[in-house]
Length: 332
Ligand SMILES: C[S@@+](CC[C@H](N)C(=O)[O-])C[C@H]1O[C@@H](n2cnc3c(N)ncnc32)[C@H](O)[C@@H]1O
Image (tube, rainbow, N blue to C red; front, side):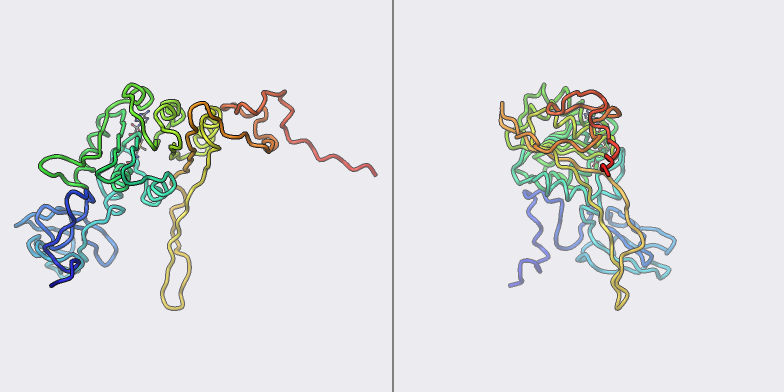
């Protein structure tokens, strides 16, 4: 008896909606070809077709029917490594309408916003559908991801990408996914939907906070993904001012590759310096407020130059109250 993992006939059950296949490569499946210089080519396998590059061509029929993880040699001698693309590879190479959430951040969102199998998740905007794929993977077929998108052309791109990644069963896409065209700030309240998590990836997430708060169940999490410090500040202060959330947590993740070769073990020279910041907060039960911070705000935090939302426990004091004072001279 072959071990299950070695049985090429055994695919991942379609009802798992993983977007992953095992066993021999089939016609219609996507593969990723990697050359010696690290160039990547993603293509769907079609019987009788050829893949052309500056290294000659490769017959698709040479790849169909083989177990992934092999090399093929192009007609002029160049070699390609052949694998099925991972989700993290798919999202950075798929067609884009809007900028995508990068895999390192999608991983943070899934872990820190605690996206669990069976969860009801609301997200906006769907953009190109990159984060949607990670959310659907995490909630599984028994969860629910409702994605709102204001722009029809982006919704179309997302629909194509999500369908390409997860495939269809009897013409139907992922059973946990609903894509709604419209603004989350107005459409979510109109739907009456309740949820466990709200993930906001958009220019002005603070405009959606009331809608998110009303939809979130007690203990639920709101999570915003924002590119700039001004957005980070405005969203965080809006959460504080709302009053129905715990103290927001803000952070970013930096990932650095390492070069590991014999005695040459050092950080890689290149690094993605910045993608975005993340902010999360938990929804309190109705009528409940989180304990106020006992510490005074940092000097100048809400001084005269601050024009954003002002937390309730920070009085609108005369302008000079929080301004840094020159250090007092000790009397001689
Ligand atoms: C950066 S993209 C989202 C990318 C997406 N998370 C991904 O990983 O592919 C931001 C999207 O939010 C949409 N958007 C902005 N505000 C919105 C709102 N209030 N409701 C719904 N969609 C919104 C924009 O049209 C845009 O497509």
